[in-house]
Length: 626
Image (cartoon, rainbow, N blue to C red; front, top):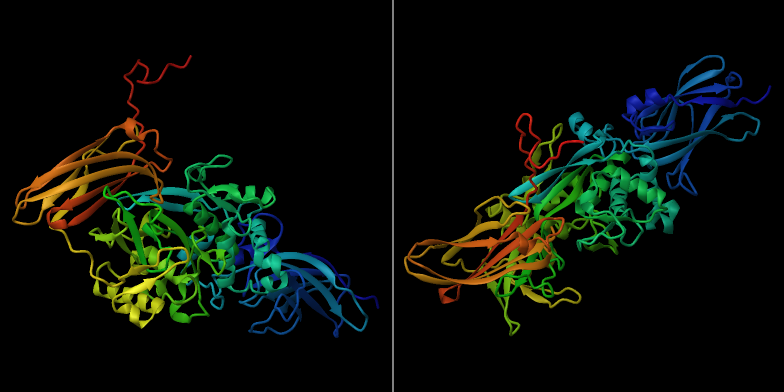
């Protein structure tokens, strides 16, 4: 009798797609999720005899092997609950067979080739059935990426659009973003991002074998979304100059960026800033099946020397000394959180994990960040993988201001040390409103528990002696400063100060505001105030000075006074960047040598007012259509 072979396969794409929540992926290729059954119908050249059975082979990546779990060979058998690929016969007519195939919940994700042959005494070649794509499965309880809420799965895996929050702490703005993970070619592009990684280029077989692990995959994507080290997707630019590319502010979604990178033969796309990196990374991880959201942190620290503080050096006008100040505080910073288990750390650290594709600091030789457990950050467990100290500092560093004197001595200046990590925000599940998730990252600012966690973090980083008084922290190429990590704040001065806007800050208009000073004592005081102002990028990097003036104020006992400040449109219009941000600083020198720094970040608003025309008259500012 002639050997039997499979002549045709029906992948049941519609039925499987609905069951696997993959029906939104375009194209004819079957897309399924691991750890979940899918069905095929096979047409045979003749009916199987009793001793004959169908043997399946699935493999992914180059040099696929069973030892690396990138290849599996299995035959139709009884249902088997376990960590192996299985095939079960569901129905059979004379020449057709319906088979249910189940992949393990920890299978390698990616594009697979499936082949079949029939077991018999005759030697037979495998017949190629075709390719399918296997993804992570947040619906499968045994998968490390399992998420137990259907509402959250709909939002964080299947929603193809969202909101990214930007601006300043006191004025948070929402921007729509099209993730587009189900658009044409996006799944292929996301898989090719993994294949373009240096990890894959150096050792393809080993790299693919690690793709069962969401920790490994998300860390690789974090590196590949930026172009540092690896010709990744997006090239960063923070200087306000975007020649030869697109301003980061002009992107409104990930699809155009990913298409441009793919069709341009993997040439990095110009340009991105933090929200662009986060938007693209959200697309890629949702596309691969990992629940992911975009998170914005206002007053976000960039701690370069791992001492858990932002040390800012200023001159006598409160202007940041860029040559001395290695740390910085950005008006806002945007990253991602993805939901999965941490088998490397233990179950108490499962859940949301911070991932940041913005290239800020190298991690194990590459510009990437995370995954860092949000729970570990809140509890001060900064020693745990990956990049805990950097993320902890972003939300919880102390903000220390130093006045730098001409003789190169420095002096601690009183300022708000608790301004880091405010209004940590993400889009709500099922709506476009903003949810404040600051409490997931830290205990209430200034609380006893928050200070205990800060001490714990210092201890984990620098050892027991660091939790006492002083720690010497040296970074390659830096000055090696003494850092009194847990010291009391600078002496609170007897005068307080605050900037107050007198009119809303409108683009194209003069800025009118006042510096309000209050004497907290029952004795008269003299205050010398040095005012400065500069246009800035959202990273708070100054672009150009637009204000520089001094005042001397006499304050009677418990008296309050206002110093009016006007910055004309002509003063700032030439130097304003697309970020439309201005930073004001007032260095206040009080009697008896007290010093106080007051700062205010201003974001200028665009408002267009259209006046309603009188009946029969053309609208003001409009011309009749000819």
